[in-house]
Each structure stands twice: as C-alpha cells, then as structure tokens.
Image (tube, rainbow, N blue to C red; front, side):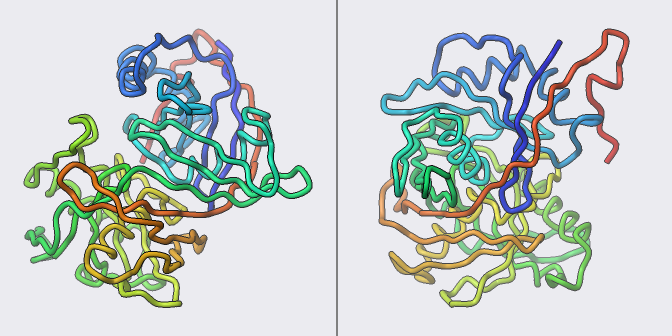
Length: 332
C-alpha cells in the first residue's frame, strides 16, 4: 500500500490532501460518498490521520468526483473521529491548491473555485498575482442561529449560557469567562476540558435538525469565545474544540461562519461590516456578512471568510504487512 499526500496548513491548522493511492469511490451524492468511505475505507483515515504519520489533531481532505452541477471539485473531510460536513480552513487551502495544480483555469486577479462539500457548494475566491495564488476567501452555505440564549448546568461549572449556530456544521457558542477562563492566562487543556464538557452535555440534551438533510444535524463541537461579539475594530478571539476533543489551530472557517450568523441574528454585526477573528495560536481570519438568505424556516446569512494557506510538505506513506502500529494509533 502506498498513499501520497500534500501537506498544507491554514493559520497553523494542518491539512493533509490525499493525492494518490486511494481506492476508487462509487458514483453517488457527496453524502453517499461520505457514507461509503466511512463504511469501507475508514482504515485509510486512521493510517493518514493517526500516529505514527499524523497526530491527535491532524486533519485531512480527500478529493472526489463532484456531483453538483458547476462544481470544479468535491471534497470529503477527515479527522480523529470521522468525517465532517464542512471545513473552512480546508477550503482556503484547497482553493490555493486547485489553482496551483491546474485543477481550474488560472485567472487574474481572482480565480473562482467551486468546491462541493458534504454541506453543499462552497465558492472560493483565490487572489492570483503574477501567476501565483495567494489569499483565499469563500462564501459557504446559508448559516443560521439555531438556538439563542440557552442555558444548561455542567458539573463543576454550574449554569452555562450558550447559543447553537450552523455554519456548515453545528457549533455551541459560549463565552469562556463563564468557565473562569481567559485567553492568554489559562492552559489550552483548560479550554478543551470546558468545551468538551459542554459538547457532551448538549449532545445528550439538545436535539438538532437541519432543513436539508438529517445527516447534517449533529453537534460538531463547541467554540469558546472572549465574549466580544458586538462589532468592533478589535479582533475577537476564540478556540474551537471539535470531533473527539480536537483543537483547531486556526480561527475555524465554519466556526467563524457560525459566529457571524449568531452575531447578525442578535444585531451585533451588519451586512458588509468586516470583523477579524483570532485563534488560540494567534492566526487570524477575516469575516463579514455578505448578504441575507434563508435555510428552510431559518433566517440565514451568507458569510464571507478569508485566510491564507501555506505548503508544509509532500510525502509518500507505506504500511508494511507486519506493522500493526503502522495502521494507526492515538495516545492522547
């Protein structure tokens, strides 16, 4: 077995793009492909994401044949738990990758790349100057505030207020100060423990629904914020803890989209206002509300999120027949 990959990162968050060696996937919708990969090729996810080739917080992308009309490419996202429905940092990296690899015709000053994700069509705009791809922004599927000003009780923390918003995936949004946390003062581990506790409680207590497909209706994780939601020129900081307590090093593209939907629904940001979002690692995404939309019965927005991706390596991976650990393991 030989698998080839290109590694990139967006704001410090890794993306391992599979470029060769992956078995053929049957024709179908993107959600059918996602289910097929889960059922038949999950051992490859573990080889690519887990140790000794990856790590607990590794993230990957598998390019597949698109099904939606107008899509230039389609992608399945993978991580330590399984397969997500949307990933903004991956879209930023894939936008640059698509231009660099000639998957779309290069145009200056901006090349459009239509990317089909499990949540729907995402339109990436790649800045191109002198033939080189640079910063990338994208407009994702309609995002909306699903539940506003809710409260639950968490053992060890007491009453915690939260919102739930959809930005291609569902996130709980909560002010970190409720947990006694402050960015720059507490350990990342403390944020992870708090976010994981909230996610676990809400998965058990708070049912979700999505107007397009039942497979989109699951809580992907929790985003703890600095509470600075009202529009300001000052960056607002957050940490996203998703999947199986995985920590995003970037501000989280789908998370920024969800935060913008919640902010707009609460009157904290207007159409066209640009806000800067900062991650736990200090990297930044731009975010704004491009326009309003609908998602079934929900008032929604189309967000525009921007960032920059860089290459970090290329590799060829093998698994020797007698190497059981080489099939993937996690210690954390």
